[in-house]
Each structure stands twice: as C-alpha cells, then as structure tokens.
Amino acid sequence: MGNAVSSLKLLSRSLRAQLFAWVTATLVLATAVNLYLSFVSATSTSELITDRTLLASATSIAEAAHVDSNGMLLVDIPPAALEMFDTGHRDQVFYRVVTAWGSLAAGYPDLPKQGKLNTGENGIYRDLPVRALTLTHPIVGLSRDGAISVTVAVTQNSTRALRRSLWQSDIAKQLLLVALAGLVTIFGLQRGLAPVLKLRDAILNRSPDSLDPLLPEMVQSELRPLVYALNDQMAKVQSLVAAQKRFVSNAAHQLRTPLALLSTQASVALREKDAEKRDSALQALNRSIRHVARLAGQLLTLSRAEPVNSRSRQDRVDLAAAAREALANHTNEALTRGLDLGLEADTSVWVQGDGPMIREMVVNLIDNAVRYTPDNGIVTAAVRAEAGKAVFTVADSGPGIPVEERSRVFERFYRVTPAQGEGSGLGLSIVQEVAEGAGGRVFLGEAVEGGLLVTVELPLALAGTSR
Image (cartoon, rainbow, N blue to C red; front, side, top):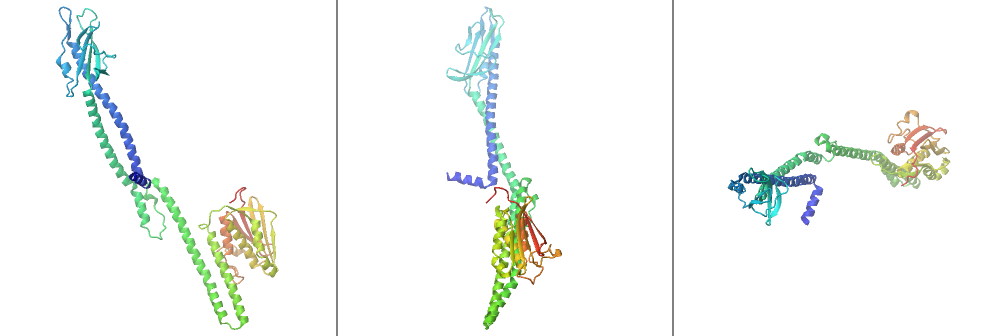
C-alpha cells in the first residue's frame, strides 16, 4: 500500500513519469487489443489448416471407393488418408462413408454428418472435442443415386497446438515491439525534456540580481508561453525593484537635509540658556519634526500609489464626503488664518478604486491649497458628475503656478517656489499617480480667485458595485 502511495506521489510530481505512464498505458492497451486479434487470427489459421487436411483426407477416401463386378460398393481406406493427421499430438481420426440412400459403407456408424458440405465444424464425438468435415463424391456404377457421403473427424490436439504456437510467436513479437517502444519513449522523453532542463539550468545559473528576459527559442513552441509568462513576471519584479530603489533614493535624499536641520536645532536648544531663545529653538524644532513626519508620510503614500505597488481594489468612495472630511480637518487653521473654506457639492458622487489612496488624493489637493493660500484667502472644493465622469476641483486664491511650469510640477520633489511654505514637492505627484491608477486624469488651470485650479476627472462607479 505504501509503495502504491509513493508511486502516485511520484507520478503527480514528475512530468517525465506522467508522460511515460501515458505512453506505456497506450502501448499496453494497443498490445492487449493486438494480442486478442492475434489469437483470433491464430485460431482461424489453425482451423483453416485442419479443414484443408480434413478435405484432403475425405477426398482421398472418396476416390478410393469403387463398385465391384457384382455392383457392390467397396471402400478401401488408403493409409495416407489417416496418416496425414499424425503430427505427434496423438490425435484420433474418425470417418464414415454412407451411400445416398443411407447405407453404411465403411467407418463409424454413429459419426454424425455435418450440416455444411466441404466446411469444417467443431463438435463433440464420444466426449471428445473434434473438428469434422463432410463432402459428397459421385461413384460410377451404383445402381441408384451414384454418390456417396464421406465424413472425417479428428480430435483438436493438433489444432490447439498450432494455434498456441502461432499465438506465442505473436506474443514474443509484441513484447519485443513494446520493449523497443519503451526504450524509444524513454529516449524521446529525455530528448524532449532536455530544453526544459536547459531552461531550469539557465534560471538556476543566473546571478541573484539578474532579471533579463529568457530566450523563448530555447524551448519547444508548446512551452514558449511559459517562458513569456516568466519574462512578464520578471519585468514586473524589475519594475518593483526599480520603484523600491527609487523610493529609497528619494527618501534618503529628501530626509538628509531635514534630519541635519533637526540635529542642529536640537543642539542649539540644548546650548541655549536663555528661556525665551530656548523656547524659540524648540518651536522651530517642533515645526521641523512636523515637516519630516509629513514628508515621510507622503513618501510612503507615493510608494503605495505607484502601479507596481498598488493593490487591485474596487472600493466605492464618495468624493463629496471625502472632500467634506478633508476640509473639516482644516477648520481650526482656517479660523486662525481667516481662510474662507467652501464646498460645492449638491449630492454624493461615487467613484471606484483604491479607497484609501483616493481619499489621500483629496487630502493632498486640499492641504496644498490651504498651505499655499495666504491669510484671509479663499479655498473652494467642488464635486459634480458630468458626462459619465466624476469631476473634483480645488480652487484657491494663492500665487498659482505659471503656465510654463505646470508640466513640471507633477515631477517628484519639484517646487516652483522652494522658499515658500513647508511643502516637499510630492503633493501633485501623489495626485497624478492616484488619479491615473483609478483610470482618471489631472488638469491644472487658473482659478477665478486668481490662484491655482486643479481638476481631477475619474470614472463614475458602476451601479451596485461595492466592496
């Protein structure tokens, strides 16, 4: 039982074993059918040879019959008519010669006449399996109907021996053919699987950092889709590695200066003995910490928003509710700075995609608008459905972005006015990554208030979809 289970496990794991098993099963089935047909053919051949011998014996006996001068039928059985069955298998021969009117001329009176003339038939005589044949033969000189009926029967020892000999010869040939076919199959499997093993070796021998595509020509056409799939997967891994390297490089570059500033400000605060100056240094340190924390958060958001890292989600997000929540988070700052925050949204507008990232996009747009709008300024967000699209806009009364700069502000860490505010230059990059990931677009324009107008178009969510 254990060996059978082990064999099944090997068969399920090994392609070579599966192919060999299928080929062997096919050969065994074909051999079994062929051996059956060979048995039928050997039986037919042995019976045909026996029938020819029976016909020859019956003809020899019939030709030996003659009529004497008194009109009596005489049958002299030729020895050759019986000796032709002497093949060394101790067969018994029975015969009967009968006139047309039923008189026994010679032989065994109880030997039955066969129904078909000149055709051998199997039967039982004296509890022995025999094959018998009957023929009629004309005799010149008989007073009545001038014909006799000759029946010859022989036991089937020779017939069976001949059939067995013919069949065993076929069995030997079939086994030889199966053995040759098995060897050819094994050789063919080795040759056929050689490209697969070559592909395996090519993958194992590669350096750990090599993601170059494999050559499809190294395997057969049936296996090339596998190579294409491997190449596609390696391309995705390569993109992921490149994105991770880019993220690490950007993070290291952007965090180096703020961290150095934090260290300097902390050192100043520690050395300062004047309480007022020390408080001022600690406040500056606190602002720098907030800036670094925001920068780290935006770096992580940007990394998650990249296509190679983004998750395939189909959340339903209400843009109006997301904008309302983002504006509410700036209520205290708006009251302090005298900002006029507004939302134009008559009803819910649903979009579909990665919910957390879409909400982060909304937060970034509103946060940028609030950050760059001077005190007593205006920030207005609007959400509407238009021509099968969800349109989200954020307008402010800040300095805006010159037309010639608008194509570059989507680049990471690019800032039009580096000295203004505490921005990192990642906000619009995040917005573009998220919008494109959800199948949308981002446009920059000039707001009525004189500042920047950012427009995001996203596909509307399909009715009834949720997650």
